[in-house]
Length: 312
Image 1: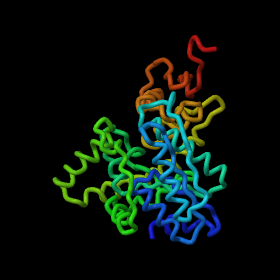
Image 2 (image 1 turned 180 degrees about the vertical axis):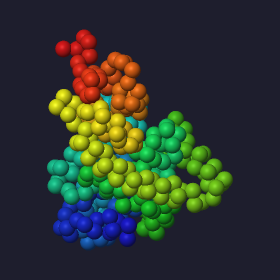
Image 3 (image 1 turned 120 degrees about the vertical axis):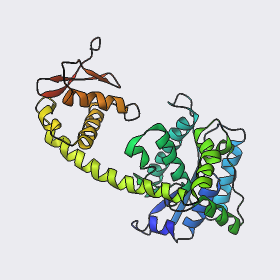
């Protein structure tokens, strides 16, 4: 039912791809998708990070073909040289491969098997990082070609579904490796919260993400309008910015910094606070330096982009 709802807006003839690692969540998702009478294919990504990962990918692909999914693709990726730790690099490579496969095959959507438990873990990790509303909104149900139809489904239910269908899910050893923060949250932090606060803590964390995501969408729209109102001939008008509510102004400045070329992954809270200080706490301070060598200074009643010294 969750998968059917998640695809209700797509034409019946549209190709749907399921990203499947062979774990319980993605196996259950692939099985549910193929029962909907739609064109369903499968993509499994081999990151090459574990011994035998190529065999696992071939096994998942063979199961998919036997189950009637078509097309079935194995995408082999390399994480060498990608930014971040092993988890971040693998995620970057995986999403790039899935996007490329969707483009090549003309798929209308790529389904990801993240569950309510994954969402609860994401929210808890965001809280620990002090990530703010954007982090607390968790993983979106939809972003671009990607969809997560199981965000309201418990991980235990995907395991029950696999058992009922006679499927033997692959157990990713990374999921129990204490070297990874998410694994520690899954093994220790969330069970401790459930013990202390009761089983409702998992759906409540996931519900919090959905509520915050809705608020974020509204604030993003308001901040986009506010940014347009603040544009001047040379940059942004300080008086217009100063009249905004702080939450709107901060988002408008963040959006403007992205427009100037600051990469989102490197643009931190401190950068936006420094930009805001040029508006609300101006005492003649020098330029603010953003990632990618971008400088922003106050010139009279405007914020303007400047070229940092030594950069031509």
